[in-house]
Amino acid sequence: MNNKKMIAIELVFHNLDFMRIPIEYIGTFQLGGLTANERVNSEYWAEQFILSIDRSYKAYTYEFGVSAMDFLQSSSYLSYIERIYEGDGSRDRVYIDWAVQNQVYNKNQRIRVNKHGDFFLEVSEKKGIKHIFPAPIINSKDYTVFNRKPSSTEVTRAWIAEISDVKNNFMHYAPDVIEHLIKIWLNPNHESVNHWISEVYSFMPRVLRLKGKCIPSEKLVMKYTYKGFADLIPGFADETIQKCGQEKELDLKALNRWVKAYFKWYHYALDENGRASEISITNWINDNLKRF
Image (cartoon, rainbow, N blue to C red; front, side, top):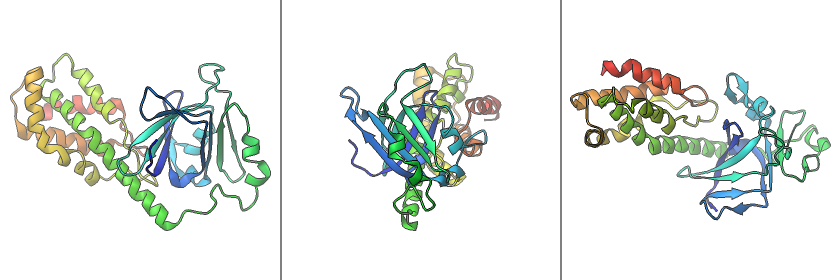
């Protein structure tokens, strides 16, 4: 069990869509009957999951213009949640109770929304959401999902924690992205090039956006990607040549420009949900290979 402070959760749905919810929007978060998976570290099962989300979370946009709250109220069913912790961005996974009705319907999941726009969820065979969140209480004039509103200090701490989470995300995956960009640059006609391009996408499919839809700045992206690992490029190039050969002469200046240009473009490719699509990454690589 992780003893660090939880800074956010990610809800992961049956179709592998996901939604990140920072802790400052969460009122109630309870896991009942929690047991550890003895075979997999940091993985758990919960018999009951109870969650309430404050109405202010509606300001977040999920994707395609759909608000986060509207998406949560749709017919999507949870598969598991991930708890994200402060500091190193570590996380664990909790699978929730699933009563199979068909492939996409979990009859143990129930939601409700009060007149203020707060969101409530229970996943359990107990079917107790109406008792956990009684309508007369959650619809009362002064109701809030919080016992008290978060202080400005708590909001600032949450902001700093999210910046740290973005930094950790970049620094964890950037070396793998750089290594595959080098493979592609040195061997653009290799039989594995399409696989390498897909790996560039899969290593870093999203960068968790900061509070208030603030996409990480170009300076932050470059600091923790290209600038943070530029000294590894010669070594990665030598390893690639030894393992895969090379179709063109190694020009370290051109190779550095190639890697740098990718991450500068990547910053502008991120949408408000912190995502760059696989097709946009593929197109950029194919369109720019001859430039460098």
